[in-house]
Amino acid sequence: MTLGSGGSSVVGENFEVLECALKDHSVDSWRMTKRWFLMPFEIGAVPRNFRLLEELERGEKGIGDGTVSYGMDDGDDIYMRSWTGTIIGPHNSVHEGRIYQLKLFCDKDYPEKPPSVRFHSRINMTCVNHETGVVEPKKFGILANWQREYTMEDILTQLKKEMAAPHNRKLVQPPEGTYF
Image (cartoon, rainbow, N blue to C red; front, side, top):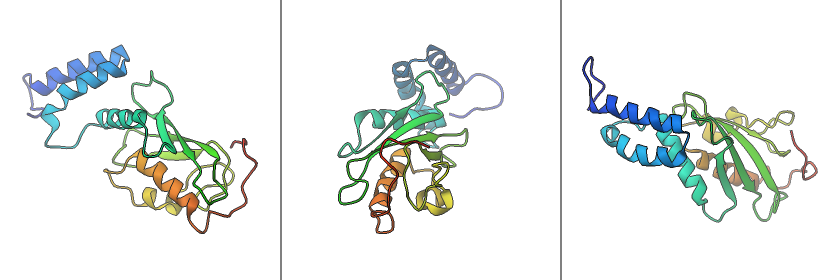
């Protein structure tokens, strides 16, 4: 089914259901609605908010060994733009045991374009601006070579791997508990 010109369609009706779920501000309503709503879109790309809902569900379940996590900053943000990530530093590095907090911002073009990523916790890494905490896309491969299939989980996992890379694993770090 497509959004044809004129007349009503299943997709048009689905948008009304989605609108009700959005007004409700309930993630559970979104989850129930999206399962029904996505049926007409199975052939094409998943709409932005449903993609973000999938990421939210995955982030809530926990990732791998639990050293990387993420979730929404504000549960009332119906556009799902502002996210918080956490990385526990990798073993055998200066980051070991440290807890790093990050902010991710998914603009209206996500997932076509990558989110902006900024460390809230102070960190010394070659791909992070030392004054702002911004992860510089040109210096961080996954952002520089962004593909629609990549997720916030992929970004956080790659940042953790970057912490353990030879050029970052022994860099002197700011005092723990300091922030940008």
